Each structure stands twice: as C-alpha cells, then as structure tokens.
Image (cartoon, rainbow, N blue to C red; front, side, top):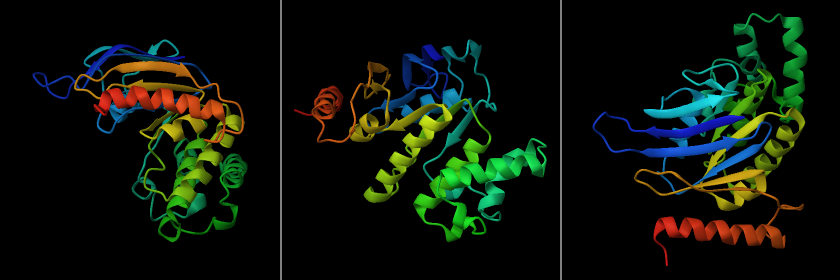
Length: 251
C-alpha cells in the first residue's frame, strides 16, 4: 500500500497551497490513474511519491515507510523520453545502465535486457541510438530501462501526451500488458478520461485548485473490451466527465 495522508504542498513558506489535505490509498499491484484538469497539481503529487518534492504537512509513505527521498523501489517515466534517455548510449546500453550502476555482472544483465527488449518490441533495434528512434520507440525504451530495475512502483507522468493518437493507443495497450505481466504498482497521471478508463484499476479525480485536493476515488470495474463502445465504459466516462465539468466551470 502506498498512502498519502493529509498531504499538503506549497512552494514558498508564505505562498498559496498548491495541494491541500491529499488523501490517497493506492493498493499494491494496482494501475492507479490520477485524473484532473491541467495545472491542478497531479505532477506535484507524483513528485512527492517519487521523493523529488516533500510535503509541507501530512505524510507520504510506501509500505508504512515515509518517503523522504528518491529510492530504488520507485521509478519515474517522464513525458519527454528524449530528454530522459542517454543520447550517447545505444538501446541495449540504455537499458542496462542502471544494472551496471548496481554492480550487476554482464551474465546477470544480459537475460534481463533481452527479456525487456522483447517485452517492449525493441529486440530488432538494439544497436540504435535514441536520436534514431521514433517518439513511441523512445518511450518504449524508457519503459524497458525502468522495468529492468524491477521497481515496486512505476510512476508515469502523462508519458503519451506528445504522441500521435495511433502510437498512443498502441503504447497504452503495451503498458497494460506489461503491467499485467510484471505485477508492478503503476501510478499514471493523465488529464484524458478515456485513457484513465482504458488503463486503470482505480481512478482518482482531483479538484481544479487552488488548494487542489482529491474530489473522488473509485474502482474502475469495466469489462472487456475496454473501449467507448462498451456501455460500462460510456457510463463511467459520463460520470467522470461530470465531475471534471464541475471543476472547470462548464455548463
């Protein structure tokens, strides 16, 4: 269980509260989608879980241990994969970088790298460098690099936001399949309702802010196929859309 209890955040001692009294209980092995309007503080919550930011009050904990810094149990997937990858290393070298830093021998690294190369569909591109890859391939490489370290929690900050619609859907399917296979806990930030329903086992909807907080949390019990043609999908979409419309002041 990963839990935020009355977690509040502001960036200056006398500044406004960005987040106020955040309450989240994220089950282990879940695919938890954090949904809300742009600028509401979703990424700030992710940064607190990652250990990049500290809450000014309240607690952020993983398995009852307070999160006070980045750690090997958590790994972040950023939206701009090109900036996160090592441009001077090829695909295989990028994936094994973290394991080399851990002191793991080549005989240990190779099967792990091969497994995740296959899992993300990059086995035929091992000798390429990041600037030779498409945007979708860069994101798959970033994902493989994270998975190779086998983190307990994978934090994804709108990772498909810069991709075209077809590539985005392909990667959504790939991430969902990988999550099922690895059993990691995934926390996925998005402002796209359809994406949250397609991916999530749980969804939390945030208020717009200032002093943003959690407006609603719900399990995402939608039968397959998970697409808008499914009546359960459409019903949940409408419910969440209404919650977000209230926050954005739409009629």
